Image (cartoon, rainbow, N blue to C red; front, top):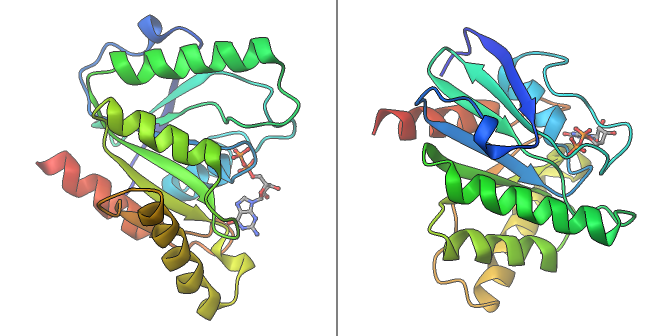
Length: 198
Ligand code: GDP
C-alpha cells in the first residue's frame, strides 16, 4: 500500500470523542519507549507525525490519524512505565479497555515489543485480555537493527515458543521492523491493505 496522505485528526482522552467516520481502524500499542512513535512515522513516511517521546509515560492520549482518506491509524498511550503512579495506571487501563470495547471499527491491534526482550508479563497479560475480548492482534518486533541478522529469527522464534509454553495455541501474525533502517514497513502496510479489502 502506498501512503498518499496522512493527517492528524484528533487527540483525546475520551473514547466517545474519537472520530465518528465509519472508517476501519488499526491501533498501535506497547510499552513506553518500545519505538511506537518512530514506527508510526516510518509507516506514514512522515518525520514528525507521531511525537517521539521525550518523557515516557507522560501523555495518555488516543491519537487518530487519517490515512489515504480510507482508514485510521490510532496511536494509543504506552504502558508499563515504571514511574507511573497507581492512579495513572488505573486511568490508563480504564481508557484502553473502553477504547477496545467500544471502537467497533477496530479491525486489528498491533502490539509492539522490543525484539531484544523476552516476553514480558505485562505484554502477555495484555494479549490475553485482547483475545478474551475477541480483538485480533499482530505482534510487531521493533528495533531489529539492534541485533545481528542471525539473532533476529532466533529471538522471534524464542518469543513465539515462550508464548506457546504459556498456553497460546496459535502463533499471532508477526512483523520484524526497524524504524531506523526502514525494515518491515511494506509488510505491515500490505497486511493492513489486505484486511481493509476483506
Ligand atoms: P515510544 O515511546 O514507544 O513512542 O518510542 P519512541 O519512538 O519515542 O522511541 C523510543 C526510543 O527508541 C527513541 O530514543 C528512539 O530513537 C529509539 N528507537 C525507536 N525505534 C528505533 C529503531 O528502530 N531502532 C533503534 N536503534 N532505535 C529506535
